[in-house]
Image (cartoon, rainbow, N blue to C red; front, side, top):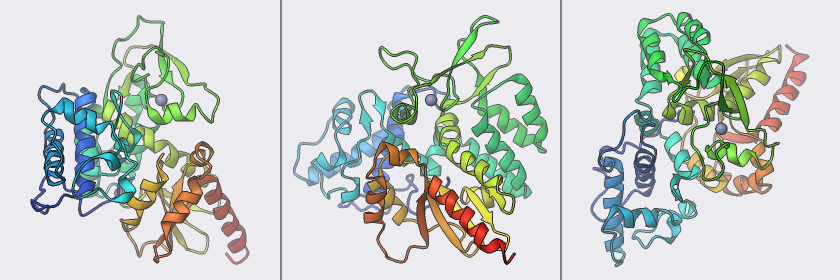
Length: 386
Ligand SMILES: [Zn+2]
């Protein structure tokens, strides 16, 4: 999931001259600021002043409005009204890039999936919203050369959005390093508002987390946008129960959002690939350079990065701007999208295709069911020679 980009260090801003604006950076900044403002507590703190990133993003926005000859926004409430509009409707100069124009950052009192995706794709920013826990885990494991520890840690966080005392202790014991154990402790918190013993807590059956946010008049639904969208294509079986027991804990908000929930696709695909006996399958090679590495019996290696996006235009544009990591270590590279995106939007594949271009990109793309079929076919074809 983590893609390194060279131009997303939002702290500097030194490269943008007074007359220009990097819209990519500004939109990521605004998204992160909104996330901190609207969901205090996702990073364990409450917001006492408007988040720095939000203020920074808004100042850039105001400057762009002045350049366009528009009346600039004067207050944060003004800005928030503007942020509920698609980027393409903003009266700013220079104009945001075309592929961003349908992007909207806020919907009512929540940040949108667009905003979430911009955050997820920027490790520096999502790291900030998760107390940098996953970044510190990568650092810890890399220094000690412990790829296995990294896979255990990340795998546990994805597979256990909620964990019992026993599960948690078992996971702690499986980690060889004291600092890594401390980080796992830091990643989890007690389930808030525990019921009395013997009662149940409500769990979202899609993302596995405690029902995180209550949407108006529909208190039994998960507020996670992806879970809500899935109601459209899967049976609406979103409410689960888990009996309360002392020591039950959940992964913290930011990690739930930016690690556990997006991690479902890569774990599912990994599970299906790992069942194919002749493959060697590896999760998060190179400390998360990409999601899955596959080695066929004849030694050919494929690299996979899973991307779950509700916005194929934006996704194709963003992927077109980055290099697939660790070239040289694989023969073929793929971005894999969950097939439910195609069910939600039958035009999904066509939109990606039309924006992908033929400019010699190293990586291609597939939906996960197609990808799996392709892997099986290659095993059959090479099996004779292997
Ligand atoms: Zn959910």
